[in-house]
Image (tube, rainbow, N blue to C red; front, side):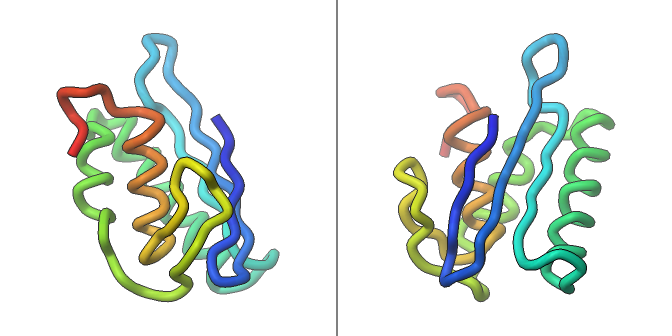
Length: 107
């Protein structure tokens, strides 16, 4: 699944893929301009989350950790499913929650 967003003028894309058994297996979050600090940090975050998922961490771990975090950029997203985010981490948490958690795991 791929979602695009713009938070406070910062464009981004979140792509997720599932494993063969349908569970979340890979997260690719991109934001900022190529070779920027923000682009590097979102790439590192994506690698860390994907590594943890492959080691058995449930997606709810990241939703709980990043939901309602506050830092810039923040604001409207242009994503109808996630209209407002208090940070990139909050956007990631809301999108993972929306796309990958079943009713028992949802907040």
